Structure formats: structure tokens, C-alpha cells
Amino acid sequence: MSPDFVTPGSVRSAAEVNEEIRALWRRTGGTLSAEERAEYELLVVEWAAAIRGAVVRAA
Image (cartoon, rainbow, N blue to C red; front, side, top):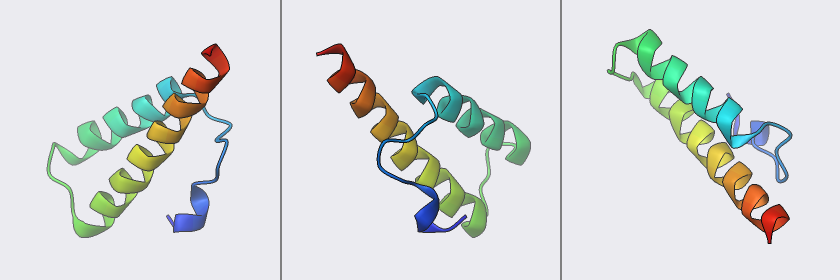
């Protein structure tokens, strides 16, 4: 996954991204390789952006 994958105003909800994070942890058995760690970090950034977007919409 490239850093370009995460774009401002993600179209995925925080719940969708969270599920992908959970699936990654299940798939790896809780131990991430360097590549998987990079994927995880991008997902967390995307999740945080989705949360911020939800908070702004709620305000």
C-alpha cells in the first residue's frame, strides 16, 4: 500500500477501516511483518481521518 492510498475525506467509514484493521491482526496472528506494519499504520491514519470526519459532521 502506498501513502497515496490514504486520501483526505476517506469514503470509507471508521467502522469499515476498523474491520480491516481487525482482519489484518487476525490474518497475521498478532505478529506483523515490516510490510504488514506499514499497512497497519496507513489503516490507522485512514481510521483517524474517518473519525475526525464523523466528528466534524456531527458538530
